[in-house]
Length: 110
Image 1 (cartoon, helix red, strand yellow):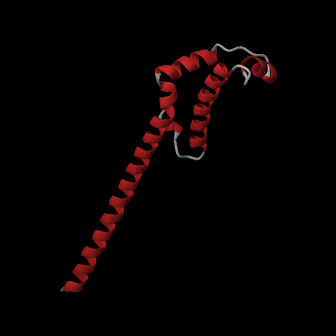
Image 2 (spheres, rainbow, N blue to C red):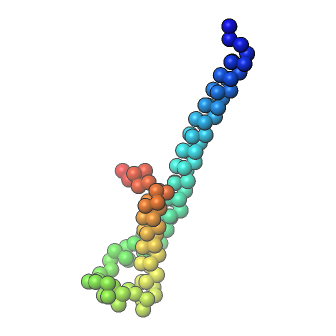
Image 3 (cartoon, helix red, strand yellow):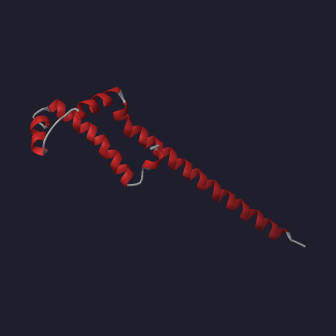
């Protein structure tokens, strides 16, 4: 015959197991939610109308090498400099987040 102490230990063990599984599922959900929030925040810069305009302007730029780029669009031309710096900063931030594994590229690519 099973005594009460054995039954209570089994019930307590089952409770701890259920709590551990619940914690792991909650942690996984929170990590995915955090990833989505980070992705939404970082990509909001170039998903907006201003972001598309900056992207279109930057993609129409033409240069031969770094010196040519800086001469045409560098700090001597503050308007263009600001557009490419803000756009490339957004791209760099996405790259940093992917490299640090705070953002997983496979979740957002078809």
